[in-house]
Image (cartoon, rainbow, N blue to C red; front, side):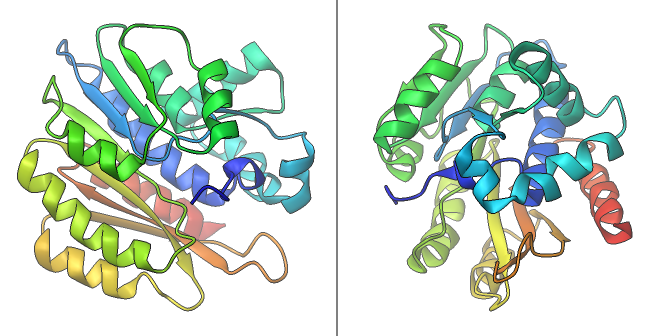
Length: 259
């Protein structure tokens, strides 16, 4: 949806969950001396200023990174990357998943990032380091995912993170993941979804459990960031989870339960 801008929600509790798992997966995958591909279907702007009007309007970052950064272990890759980007850009900076991926991968890895929103696309171009192995596409992310699957190199990870503003997204994602897995059997596929009060993700999750029974499902719950906010949790479906990710997901969920 061209109306969606993540700046209002950057650094919220769902971002903590999503980015913590993404960083663990990429940190492990980048330890091997083999090139990998990273693809992202809905990239956003890459770098956010949590002091700007959009972020302050919702207050979600205060309940997310503002609450969780110091609670993460000092050696957790998500905490390390947030602290590194703040050292470069100031104490209110927050890195979105494209910049997180760029900082956790190597120069010989390949990144393909899709962002269709004109303003977000322009901001993403400005935020990302210039490198021939980083390609930023102004195109529909699902179309890009289908077109570039399987990528080269085949070893790699794809993050799928739609806006979920249209209810049909749930049915669409339930079909997309199995289709991508059939084309790219070795690829790590990570699908993020919101957990809302009406539990509209339920049919999608049941369908994915049937078609991809070995996929990891990680869910965390949290108090809504403000009155009237319908998101009560965050979920991730991971096909071909890298070594250590299931244990990291369990540990993260336990921290959320203790909160």
